[in-house]
Amino acid sequence: MTVSRRDFLTTAVVGSLSLGLQGQQSQDQSSKEHSANKTEPNSGAGKRPIIVCANNGFNYLDDAYAFLAGGGDTLDAALRVVKGPEDDPNDTSVGLGGLPNEEGVVELDACCMHGPTRRAGSVGGVRNIKNVSLVSKAVMEHTGHVMLVGEGAERFAVAMGFPRENLLTDHSRKIWLLWKEFHSTNDWWGPGLADPHWQQPPTKDKPQSELWRERIQNLQARAADLGIEPEDQLAAVRKVLFPPTGTIHCSALNDKGEISGITTTSGLAFKLPGRCGDSPVIGAGCYTDQDAGSAGATGSGEENIKVAGAHTIVENMRRGMSPQEAGMDALKRIVRNYNGDMNKLRFVDMTYYILRKDGAYAGVCLWEGYSKAKLHKIAVHDGSLRSEVATPLLKGYSQDFPPFPDIPEDLKKDSEYLK
Image 1 (tube, helix red, strand yellow):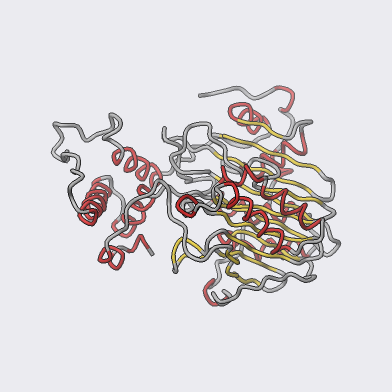
Image 2 (cartoon, helix red, strand yellow):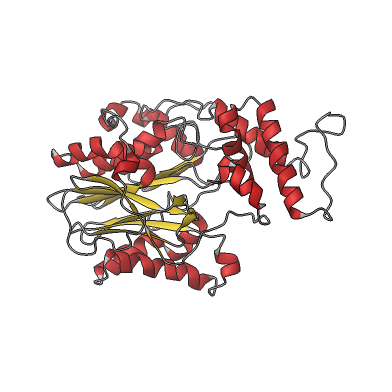
């Protein structure tokens, strides 16, 4: 829907928000990762300056750290990190190319907090604007509000000079179409009875292993029909069977002790239109206090909102907890909300990225990861760029929701998408 620009902001320019150069060339991440056996975080006073972020920001840390170490503002340094995935059409979890809602529309959320001036900005459910991290900063700098949502946030962004653009890439569109057709027994997205691809719904008396094999093979064949490249087909199937969440958080601390944080996301794939998770909620997806530290989250947004995760962590550090202790306490609150019921908790996951004002940091997570090959990690730069395995509260691996029966062993071995 086309909307006009708001007159009172027409003189504003987005140039003042520009982040300059993108991150430097990608480095060989695997050579810099810490051992998967690392469990002790930097709980004592650490180095400054330092940047801590979700691992999908790894490739953008060198540029951001150089900017921060050269005297750049802490929030602008963090924005340099998260803007990278927002601009990357191949990252289906943030910004351009993010997986859409159930209607095929990409909706983005973000919030930021600037420690030195104790200000905050947030936007939710924004369509057609790629860099919502920058829009959240614009809300902070150019309005008397803290949060704008939906059409109003989009109109504000356009008035500030952000261009409208189609955020649904061809690749994400095809995955969405595959998802729609997978759910065709519950709606009117084909194939219909007259279509040669139509198949009678599987009967419940079939072995679960056979149902799984049919489901995966049929989806892969349909992915090929939609024009998804062969090397991407099984990854697309996985996104359909297990709709992913996707977010990036970044906290930055300079040598003067100034600290800021930012979180941005395209949210849960195929969500209900208008759904906002924790990423635009200050105190949940991101919270920064100049006197204590900064924290952010990725994972099950609804669960994090209920424990005000980032705020809880920062307040825990204010009361004297180490970064790891503060994060573990927040994770235990999630567990408590389900009375420790592992049958439910296995479908929940959360990773916290924690940075204390003195440079101590930690990455903690509810489960070890999604699999042995997909452990939860944080990225850190304090003059040395590295990835570190986050410390889990629970041993084992989370499962995607909605739940599906166990996958046959031969498919586990043969299907690249499960790795």
